Length: 93
Image (cartoon, rainbow, N blue to C red; front, side):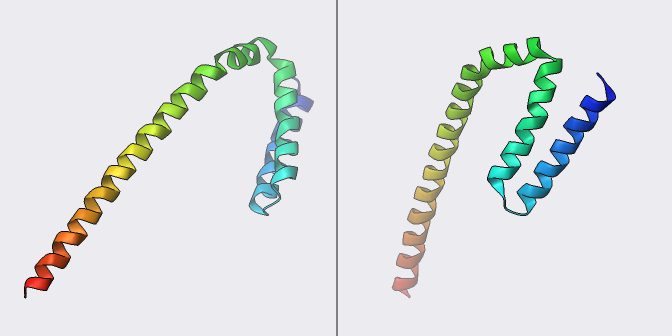
């Protein structure tokens, strides 16, 4: 990889982080996109493979989020029942 490409990628990543920390998300996405475009021009076959596998990544992420939401719901139910039993115990005294 040429030095100018490395500098462009590193510079755009740095600028994107600074913009993200300042709360300017659209500009951060644009700066990050520039770095990704330069990187994609250097390794087009890797980005093609990632683009083809992206639907499976999304499916796995969706399954993980569904599982996390179900676990959170169970924890909420357990906390509510525990709270009710504690309130009942306090009412007996």
